[in-house]
Length: 144
Image 1: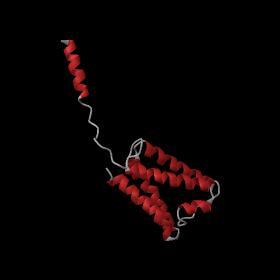
Image 2: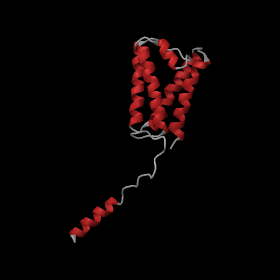
Image 3: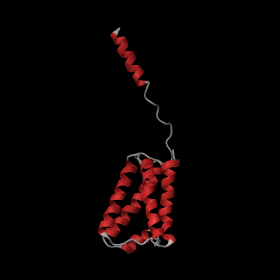
Image 4: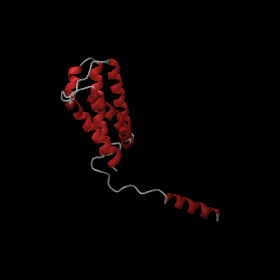
């Protein structure tokens, strides 16, 4: 009787496992994620390369990465902070946390746009940050 009980418990516990989805989205990256991970990885690459160029004093190349719409100073402290921001993005993209990261990352992106507007900067400098912000809103609140 005990063997029958143990066998039925073993079989019933296996039936609780949720079935996996039959097909993953075509945009899924190796290692997990979907469009959100792709957007976050692209954002991490842009931030990481911009921060590294700022750190080594190549502000002209950093600005060129942003289509010369934004001007980035040659500042080691700011450059290292931007590289750290990129590392956080990359880690979240690799670990399936793109949605959560994008929901929170809207705040610093809006602060960046606000600082530029309040500082009297050119409106063209808000174009790419606004595009990233829109992508973060989509990933954070729209994408499944």
